Image (cartoon, rainbow, N blue to C red; front, side, top):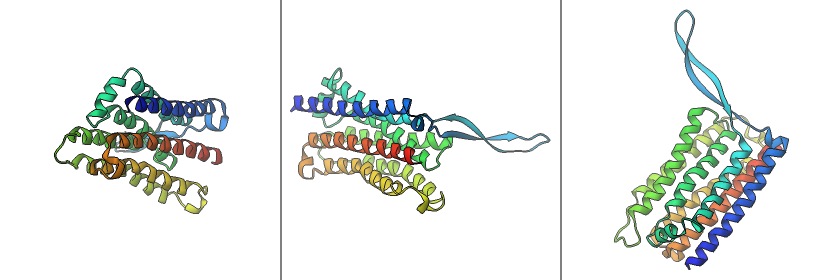
Length: 254
């Protein structure tokens, strides 16, 4: 079983690597992708001449969008190769205890980049919004890790506190995205794929929470922790692939 799990991670690493490399090449060579760099703004207070002060908007930097899309796929590839290579024994030892810290560290980085990019497409372009979305989404993943740490396989009862806090953190960026989407004017003017794509990705994104719920409720095949571990890996590939090509389609048709 251990050899199968390591082989599975290697294969998934290759699939992430192929997609990440393809998107990186497109981002560096195709003008429409290379030039898509949303500007991030800061809002600060400025003292006026003659007295008084008020807010002022300042351009801070641009997001290298395509490169960041490739980054969240390449991060996944890197962690899969670390798991199946130098950290193999640590990984297998953690799995036996019902935990995979490396998974949550990778998700804290890659999924936070994903949600920041998605939010920026709907107008969340201020530095404070970018930082808050990244950190809140990362916290969702740290709650996932905490859930595993608090509930080892030999537990006599399950403490759900971290799981439910993770849901609160995970849903918050989506509330912000929906608020901006609904206030961006006539929704009928959006490209046809935007809303279906957003809904589909939202559902896929939240399957991670349900996967953990099924694990700790020990529903059906989820009684085996390794089954849930494999589901995390499939969901990661599925979710990242959908969002990566959804974003690139959006840039192409913008």
